[in-house]
Length: 481
Ligand code: AHR
Image (spheres, rainbow, N blue to C red):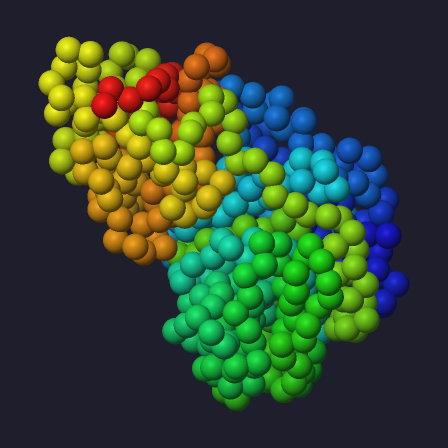
């Protein structure tokens, strides 16, 4: 049985079921999600390998070969049509056209389930999905349950990486108008023990870890690579549970009264569904989603424990984040654009210049980069400046320009300076496309002799689709210096 078969036997059926990695009903063999490719804007749906099974990622890989793909829709598997699509503007605007949020890269979160490759939904700040017209989800003080599987190592302190019940207007309509699972380490509202991240409940105008509005030490810092997070609520009662999605059982971190603040008892749930954003379309958060459901009724702990056993049996595991020409940590490389210019830096600006073996020593050093283990994720790489040790290529701010900056030791710097290398999109054997780990729709792009982290067809001038594949492909060779 799948997770939703287990919830149904417990008398608390799924009213929304979302996953890009697998079917959540034993009999489900419809579309799990839709991707859109950059080359011609065509779309295709990805279904399970067989009913109840893992996503057929080979469909995506062939459809997206030699181009980019984003996830346009995460289909609802319950038959209610509660699909998740690109979130519209609300209290806050997103960075995409017309104030919409960005769509996630289709390849940012590769994993395996029982050895079969699949892709999760890797959500950078600015990215979000929503359904403001969902049917069957809890309204008012009605009971609901939810679980989601996240990457417990991908989080931040922005508002708010959520999955669950939110406002139908995309605006903050007051306390108690949401009941969603939150994951991250923002501590301006509630917090748990340690420095986070924590599983909390986003109930609007507050993230809650227990009965107190601020800290509840029963809610632990939790960082499992695959994390099961549970939030459920019914009149006068709610709970937080969690555990390792790859082994073992769930623990209960809170089960008790509604928070000590006005507006949260009774609740005023509205029944929209959000993923990766706050109720008012706050877009500051990041995280990774693999699967999740919302139920009608308050699931028993026993039902959730059976769901957790099903999740463990699905055997989520990590897989390679890179492809194409191999890079050796510690080696010096140079990277040549298809125009014959090399990636260089002039001070903190990353640029592109003609460099040859007879160039000055200074220029050869400016064109040489030491390959390091990724500062923000050890499965990928960082590129340290040869002539400015301790400084790395990173993308900077909302302009996504590439800069060479000194490592300030922050988590944000480490993540902005981490890139996963892939076989070049231009299809040549010796080229690399160098993709941002924390913004995986974006890759190093050589454009008018500037270097940016560009997204195919995005809103910046340097995102233009024309010549994208060539501009994001670099010939890798031994460093000039
Ligand atoms: O409750 C925390 C956040 O506050 C909500 O997600 C958002 O709607 C509001 O800004």
